[in-house]
Image 1 (cartoon, rainbow, N blue to C red):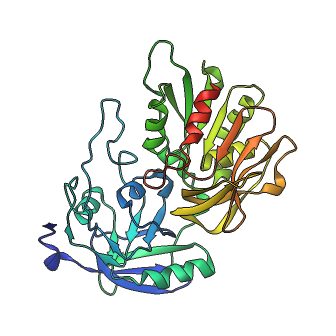
Image 2 (image 1 turned 90 degrees about the vertical axis):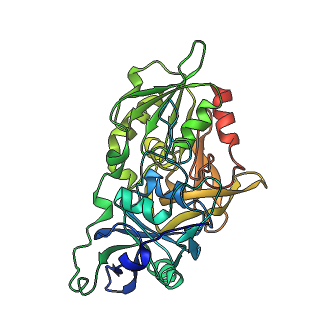
Image 3 (image 1 turned 30 degrees about the vertical axis):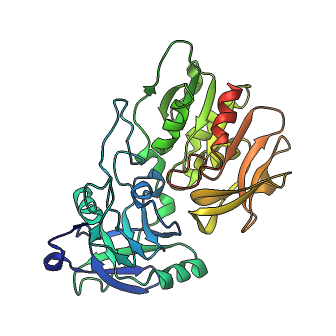
Length: 369
């Protein structure tokens, strides 16, 4: 068992203010700086290192509904020779803050190298604990996601009115790679273009495990100029309507017959390229326990999800149909083309962290190459 040793002397009060004026008071256990973002909740019981480093949380203040957080510390931030993180989902924390009920200053795990609090401080990310996360989550479920501000210290929260606007920012452009990166290059291997909208590293791991060459390109790169066997469109943060350059490039690819697969944001961008519309969910799906059904079958899967937008099934063109449906609220969880090898999932089949029931999506994609 390892413990943060200096927290009793250094912790300051911290206040979360929602854009409707609601105030939650707690204590700081991360970086002591003020921050503004969209307040969202995640109902997973584990996986805070993976969630924090998931680029899809860029611009968001992440509320964890599971009450005890930090008890297993943080794994080492190591990278393979190819630059892929060993235990995380990207190179750094992308969530703008983490909000929990009970932070464990003591941690114990065979793979832990430091506490969650010390990691947050190193990366400049605020953390609050002592918040009634059940009351906060109930408010977000009733009202929908809200903008919020975290203010560190006593007496500094009054008059906080500048909350910004989450939907106005192209977060995909902030988190996407800036140049073409190639992984697993080798003779005879199939070549997959990966459009990086904020890709989780486990998507790259899952593709490399299936012995393909992955050409990772920026979100707005015209990959149609490249030689490739299949197209993969990644997850990512923010509003898909800010990513028109990617939609136009995907639309060009739809005129061909090379296999296309998308995950999360990739599902939405593929749908937009096919002519469908996207809308914002009231509070999104962020958890490890979302049930989905494969359309036309009685097959149901428990899935890991992290998204705030959804495809409008009623706007799908005549050549497209839903592939999966959410069993809780009936929203779209994937689409497929009726005649061409194009398909996608709104959930995360690579599911790191989370259930691995749907990793067959990668098998299906690679078989089609």
